[in-house]
Image 1 (cartoon, rainbow, N blue to C red):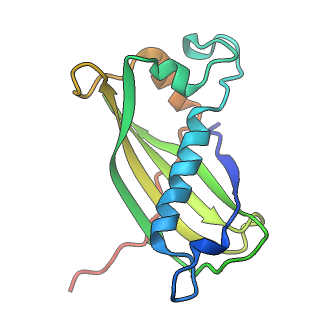
Image 2 (spheres, rainbow, N blue to C red):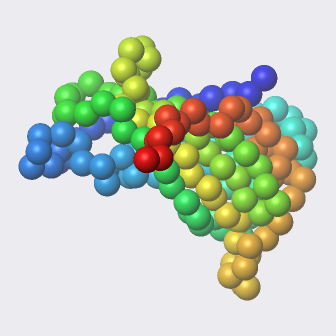
Length: 160
């Protein structure tokens, strides 16, 4: 069963723009914060895909590789205003390719009553020496599969 990882998001007063709501650029920063926390999560199951219990996805990526964002898509569903109580961002893996993986996100109230945005990112594994995409290895794929879930259910625009 896939796991969805949830992290609190603490809004800052400075996140609001002159229109009185959280600026869309801040949403990308929230996604980045969640991604960074996500790759630092311990892979706690011993022997899971060759990972040690204390390994993280970042450990499995290793010093010879890094990830780059290849694509973002965000769908805003409600305006967000500053308030002192935190929101919640959910993150999960929606696809695993040869050298890439896709992440899904939802930014919402902790109780799920309001969803402010859905988002997706495509991440590319890159060889640090060559600067070229690198194939995901078995341990990396196994770690990502732990969080594999459904694609983000974006609304689709009608052409015309």
